[in-house]
Amino acid sequence: MTSIDPPLAMLAEVTHRCPLQCPYCSNPLQLLTASQEMDTETWKSIFSQAAEMGVLQIHFSGGEPTVRQDLEKLVAHCEGLDLYCNLITSGVLLNKDRLIRLAAAGLQHVQLSFQAAQADNADRISAYPNSLEKKIEIGRLVGEIGLPLTVNAVMHRQNLDDLEALIDLSVELGAQRLEVAHVQYYGWGLRNRAALIPTRAQLDRSTNIVEAARERLKGRLVIDYVVPDYYARRPKSCMGGWARQFVNVTPNGKVLPCHAAEDLPGLTFDSLRDRTLADIWQKSAALNHFRGIDWMPEPCQSCDRRELDWGGCRCQAFALTGDAAVTDPVCELSPHHDQVKQIAKKESGESPPEFLYRRIGGAN
Ligand code: SF4
Ligand code: FES
Image (cartoon, protein in one colour):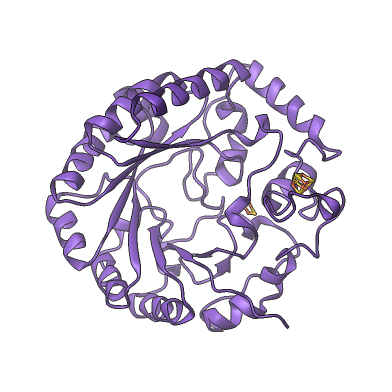
């Protein structure tokens, strides 16, 4: 067997607990409870295994990773292993003391999410009171204590009018980077797709706003821009290819190629409670299933983009066709592409339904 390069980065989903209930959360519909989470020592051993394999970065995520009172210990452990530590957070549970403790433990970067730039809309989307005010306070503190800041703005039809204000806010907070990411339709986002999908006109307007801001803010703010898949002509290279560059570890120790893969039928993802990370990464049947290009059907198999986008996203192929092994229907060359265009047109043209909020048991 040819040897498989280690992942560059691990997304460590240390918990599914979160005080917010965003209707586009990337967590699965069946959320894990606190009692199912791995303890401090188990996580430490996983990070040691990751460093040993050659992983370079740990992205602490959730849920909301700061609900874990041992987060400083986990960060300190990673720092001792020379792993780059990034915190992906909603910020609402942080305060100055905690941020200082995390920075002292070795945290190197903070990604802070914003739901909207209007307070009432931010509260409505997150189902959490006074979230905007709190996030602005935390964004300022991150800069004050000298940590680099990325603002994550997840955009959809119910907050796109705030895009310019979110760009201004990122500048005001001294963020180095802004991620303007349209919602991806898996898990909770798929359940709420009709409430979230923008119209073509909204998308075009947001693209123009981003392009103008990139020009205006050159050298001050880097803006990453992720368009909604359903309006794209070619798929994104999801996770840089299945089990190639990134590994996801769930709160209870499952090793996944992406946050949504557990919803795919017929694949059994191995647990770090039973096997080592290196063993799973190299030999897991589920990770090897869509790795590389051998699994690809036509038109991907003979396409010159097959090692650029890796056939797109398996979870999206499943969500749209019921078959994870077909070309991502976002691709214009897919026989299912028209279906995607029709969904986007129909759902964005109707009045949005109520949000189905992310909560334990909330999807039932
Ligand atoms: Fe990518 Fe496959 Fe479409 Fe080619 S046919 S662009 S490899 S999804
Ligand atoms: Fe699972 Fe794209 S989200 S492969």
